[in-house]
Length: 165
Image 1: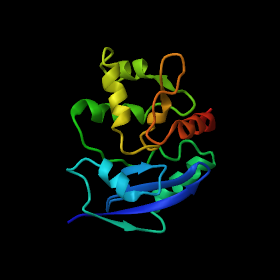
Image 2: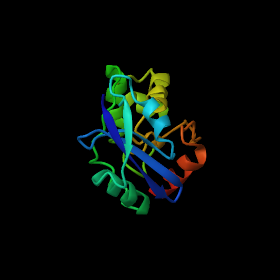
Image 3: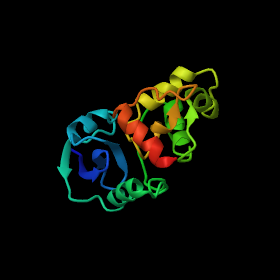
Image 4: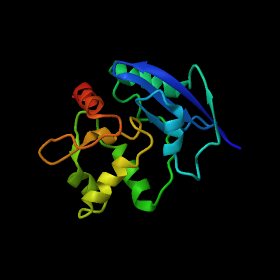
């Protein structure tokens, strides 16, 4: 029976929860205080059976705080582990390379992920991303600059994009 640790960090846009495995790798995260909801977003092969709350997750907590305070690269080195098919895993790695302050469209995301005709698949990669912030799906917009969707709400996405610009 596996256990993941989680912590809840207060941010300017509400509580942010991160779940991590024993190695300090993020399994899921987002602007919520509901760790169980986040646990359910984790692929069944990686999903921990139990959760244990901690005051801090060390480097993960520091990165969350530093990012929200303005160090936009603080999240870049935090390891993330998600599980899915080859395209989604690759697309999530591509997302981690999209620089803060330089959002891309879903069409551009599909192209740089190696499937230029798969805009819907690219959007699906964003929708299925369990590790928000660390895999910055908020940096993908619709053509024309419309926000598109975001699991944590468009107000949060708007704040993040403004924070990064």
